[in-house]
Image (cartoon, rainbow, N blue to C red):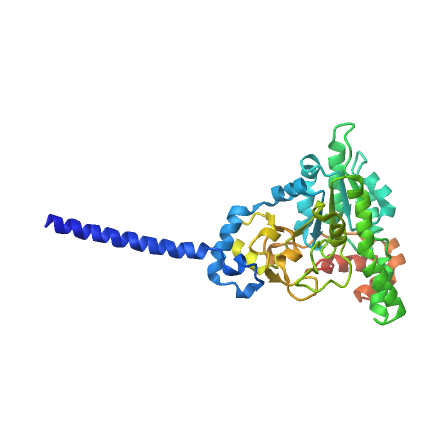
Length: 388
């Protein structure tokens, strides 16, 4: 009887081990590299099988880094990093503001070029970023004179103060962090008035298309190059989405209808230039992967990831594979967890209203009577939604 019992026990153990192996094999199957990843096939988000998400999640666990460390690390391999912010996503500005000391001390960045002023005002910008004490009035007056005279986003102008704080804390004799405008000089009030009042096929609109669409990003690239790559200086280019991509419009995409600053630079300098796209919370595959994970921001190289060939909508065109939309990627969270910019009360002054009242009324479609009405409207409405 003892021998029979032993035999039965051994059979049970063998069957149990077999069951464990089969179960383990099933788990291993869900972790195996999906065929669409292995073969670099284009795939729509909705067509990714549920079983593939475990593989994607495991890849993130193994390869993604804390966003701050990832971004600083990009400067080890590249001289210029282009960061394509969402104009009305607060986290994108706060991310760079927090990293400015590390950009200087660890990444070796000595110049930040941004879209929100042009080279003609660089002397003013230099003064604002090197004075010993914070001058709110001077900073606000600078902000009011730039872009469309409606840019009451506190976080954008906080970047200037963050660079000033870095510079005044540097040891005597240390090179300062330079902060420069790289945009083409454009009268945006005139642009927006023409867009709202002129026929699309009018000579005015055709001239506007050439100046603001076809020439703008080329000049932005030239301005950025002059301040960084041409001088052998490491730089960060802080621009809006649509000026950052280095690979958008490459096969299988159709060429984009206008030059893109990042691509102009990449075509000349290759991998000395690198694009990092901050996430808008609109990439459903990554949203799903991250739902059950640590929600702290992460970063990774998109073009070497399994997400590279996932199609996503962007830039107003047909779906595009992610590796052409983003080379590096920083994920902040789902769109419903991101925040709009902080508006600045009293940004629109009576002097501004007297000068730009026609632009305010035409572009925003409201019969404003005074500066306060414009300012109140901007406080409530200007940074809602996504895109500007």
